[in-house]
Image (cartoon, rainbow, N blue to C red; front, side, top):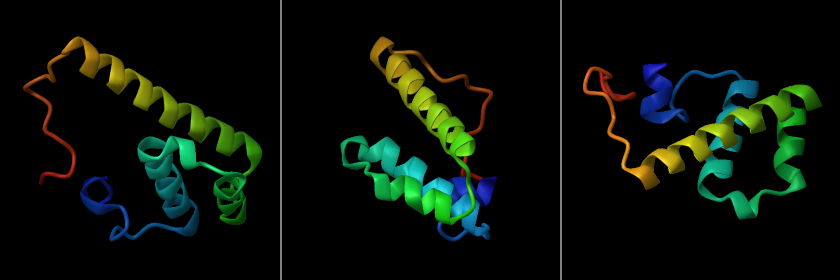
Length: 86
């Protein structure tokens, strides 16, 4: 997990996990640029429509809750080490 948090592109991921990370990154940083081709890439990596739906829901939820926390000034807990830092 630390390798994925540091840089998912350099982590040793299988095709499906790599496609999911690319999808999650784009949905997070460029949501208005999502197209049917993004979903087709996931299908091409072996994900079915239920898995794609579930992944989209999880990514969208975390984006939502992070924006709520940022807007309300929620502080991060001190006891949780940030991901990607060994």
